[in-house]
Image (cartoon, one colour):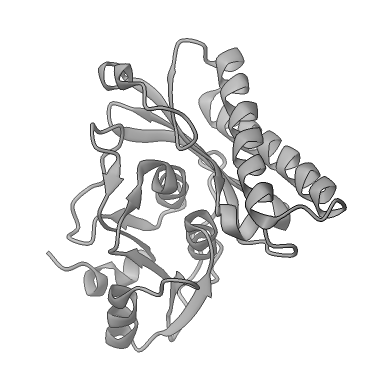
Length: 242
C-alpha cells in the first residue's frame, strides 16, 4: 500500500473499533467520561499497532502518547489524533467526531485521512475529494461550545451565516464536503487536531494557511498551533489578515 492508502485504511480501522466500542458501552450505561477515555485508548492502540506493521521505520506523534522528541530528527513522522472530539463521541447519537491520520515529510503533510465513522465517511488525500462550489451567501463554521470571536468577525465581513459543529475534523470535513465555506480558528489547538484535516482540505483544492496567509508547518518542537484557516479559495482574500 502507498502512504495515502495506509492513512485511509488505518483511520477507517480505528473508526470501526470506535463504533463497536460505542455500541458496546451504550448497552452498559457507562459514564460519558469513561466512554471517551476508553475510546481514546482503543483508537490509539489500533493506529500505533497498524503503523508499526506498515511503516515500522517512521515515527509517530499522537495526542494519546508521550512526545518522543526523536521525531524532530526524522523526515517522516505520522501525526495522529486517535479520537478527535472525545466529548462528542461520548454522547449517544453525535456524529461530529473523527479519526485523524497524517504523514508529514520535512514539515509538510504528504498523505492523510480523516475518518468520520458515525457518518460512514473517510476522506483521504488520494483520491482527493472534489472541490465543492462556494455557496452564496457563504457559511462560516464554528464550535458549539466555544464559538470564536474571529469566526464571527469573518462571518460579519462576508455576510455569512454561522454553522456550529463539534470536532476539528468534523468542521474541516464540512468545508471539504461543501456544507460550509470557511473554518477559521484563532484560539489555538495542536498539530494532531489540524494536520490530517488540513492535508485533505489542501488536496481537495481548498485554501489552507495561517490566518496571516503564512504556510502551516508540522512536526515542530512546539506542537501548539495558534491559528489557521481552511476555506474556499474564492474567499481567501477576504479572510486572510496579513
